[in-house]
Length: 157
Image 1 (tube, rainbow, N blue to C red):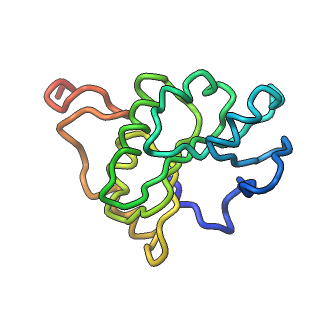
Image 2 (image 1 turned 90 degrees about the vertical axis):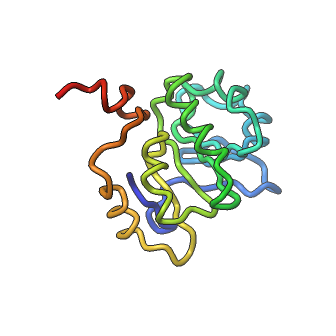
């Protein structure tokens, strides 16, 4: 998993009050995307910041055009984005990048990885080195996840 900082982020958000002009590495809100998706050039990758209170199924028709889906955690105790990521990876077989933003803390790193996130922007004061280390705390999990679908008892010796 990659932990993104503002100086390492390749994607640039378009402010809500500005017109959206198709360009490389453009990050749009869900509302902005719905307004421009018909005119968006077919070969130009785009990133979409998708709200955690919306149905991820609404995004599914456009997944082949989207390089990055950004899912938001308004509070670290709000786990709806975990479900959205799991659905993207499992049900819709989304192969692009899934990023966590918002109130993302170090302790969330293992579950972020297990549910399909491959990058995260940690909230202020969180150490990316500690988050990377948290990914190795457990050598295996009993339940299946997006990386290993079989439960531990069914994986063989």
